[in-house]
Length: 331
Ligand code: G3H
Ligand code: 13P
Ligand code: ZN
Image (cartoon, rainbow, N blue to C red; front, top):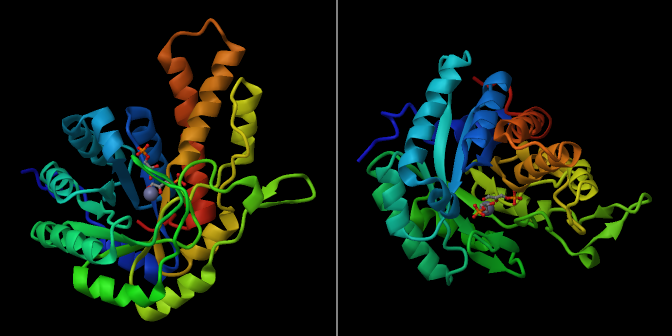
């Protein structure tokens, strides 16, 4: 058993309390390789932001659990080397689907886990989430639960339709499970095609405009559990310049559309204190790599295409931290 505390990581409790009080949200960026991790840490250090390193079960299989543990420990040391004496970094399991997986992550140094029982009948979601909380809290590991279903792809689970979180259920869920934070469904969705064109309208420039987030449901939830940490999944904004670059250099992304950044900025000022972003990073990396190959077809040194991808990612993360989540200058 490796405690996250030995690795220099923190759980999310203090981060969330400060974020709610300060009216900002903590970035939760997914990673599964070194360049993504370097970009996340250097962006967080440069902007003086706390950060959540998020690992899905797919990412864990891809990267290897032992390597991930040392990468997270290395991330703390790297942040210090970059000039941050007291980095606030959490290592979080994204969309955990079983008690066994959560236990295994906790034993390998995770400081926070999500148990996603949102696809289960309510009572089963409560029982599964409760079992994870009971285990995790023995080690001071924080737990995120989820109520309501997001459309899109969540690891191996694909949901075609979303179900908004029922505000009437949140008090019961939070008190019965003992979770530390709650992911809700108010209209965000996973992936780079969050809405079909039929669900959107087009603005004067022909750009797809998605339906707005349900801030009324968020307000109702906040009324039920005042000051309780809320999490938004599926919060990529799908930057249209990255999509255009990908398509210009041989990609085929059609009707990709995300959540407008102004709406995420608005949500960050509420009890939403963790915002999950993965797809935007994938787009930024892919655009940069495609550009290098299109302009230099003879290139075959991975540093020559992963380097620009890392630089583009870092810029994206700094932008999110400063202009969307407002978590800069908090260390
Ligand atoms: O919510 C899903 C995240 O974007 C992780 O995606 O399961 O493909 O690693 P993944
Ligand atoms: P995006 O697909 O919108 O980046 O969402 C990521 C996410 O919710 C990870 O849990
Ligand atoms: Zn998610």
